[in-house]
Length: 111
Length: 113
Image 1: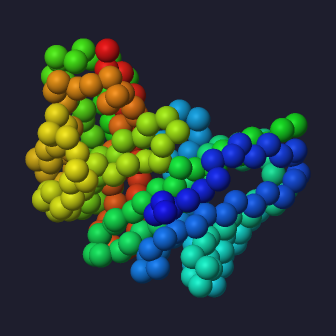
Image 2: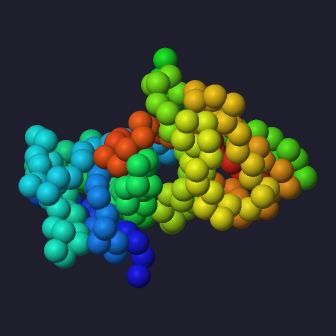
């Protein structure tokens, strides 16, 4: 089983739609979780951290389910500018960053 | 000035060449990383430097040789590469700690011919 698994997509959704991505991780001792966004031919950038209680940033909501070992990202009212690849990142901790990246889920928002 | 700067942005090299990738961060971080991103594969961590000391080497072939002369600079020396080494090489930096954000450079797109 891969350490971090994501559906690579692509997810093609119309503007205004709500879309959700899931990511599963295999190491139950993982300590911190993130969603990064990577635009085509650009570097990854942090979108949001994921907390046990769930967190929201505008149209974006991230949730963590430790029991089932998955994290999710919900995007409401999709915009064309949301088109990108969303990378799930899991950190095993250990005093400095030991992260594993998922393959990423590609989102294409269509006019 | 961007936080993490990589040069060159693009590099084409022959299998017998020697070249170096450079990374510089202006964020005052004490951890720096090299990642490889190939098509249809997740980012692969190659090397980690923490306070200028290499703390992780993820079974990377010896044709890749990292160097960290100080906490702001990181190099990746390349020699006798193979075509399958063609990829996007990303440098990142962060504070140490398990809940920290990594800041990436724009990457060097390497093509080995």
